[in-house]
Amino acid sequence: MRIFYDCEFLEDGKTIDLISIGLIAEAGDEYYAVNLDMPIERIESHGWLMKNVVPHIPGQLQERSFDDNRNLNGRFTLDPTDAIVKPHWVIANKVRDFILGQPDPQLWAWYGAYDHVALCQLWCPMASLPKGIPMWTNDLRQECLRLGNPTVPEQSAGEHNALSDARHNRLVAYFLDSLGGR
Image (cartoon, rainbow, N blue to C red):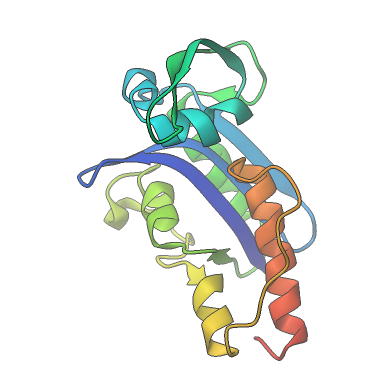
């Protein structure tokens, strides 16, 4: 069973810190969570994340300003009372249960290398993956290239919301399937 997923994360060349994760199984089951333990102060200094990812997570953005590259700067307060905001350890358990709840799970993502690292770091290190969690993610972008690099459907809304992106990954996979993929 294919599971399409996406992670939003802070990456600085040394670490990948999870912000949010969205998963959708082929059968339609979904899971979405925002990491209560994300490094908010470091995210606040990352203009691209502030502009593109932070607006999709529960909380309040204050002191808005734009830098020379039109990246948003400001202060962000995460809403820990929102039901989708969960501690890292809870997300790890729920993601494990979601993946292992699918028969013969396969992970699929668009440009999925860093997503896979963010996913594996739920259980750090990769050698500590729970039994049955795939040790790789199939890459939809590679599948697209294998099929001649067709123009895939554009995402209509919610780009950089992990669950919206996971849903779009499923749509892209079905499009690629129609061209002879899988």
